[in-house]
Length: 56
Image (cartoon, rainbow, N blue to C red; front, side, top):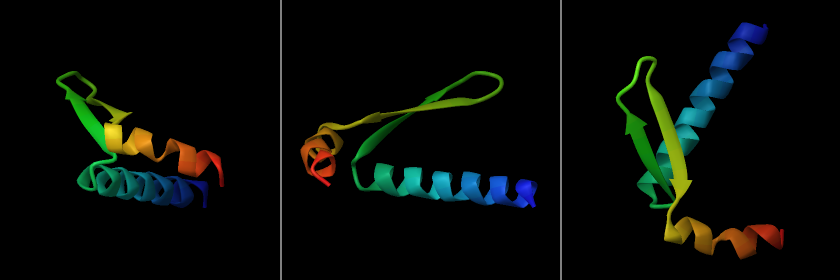
């Protein structure tokens, strides 16, 4: 059960990350390393949403 939950979680995280990148909220940096590494950072648009999210 835990293995299937972990795969679902990884898939959901990947999908969310892709959508945020497509909407210009995050920048994705891929490093040519073994194993592969990816880092995400907020864009200016993403940073502009922080006050709204903090107020929730």
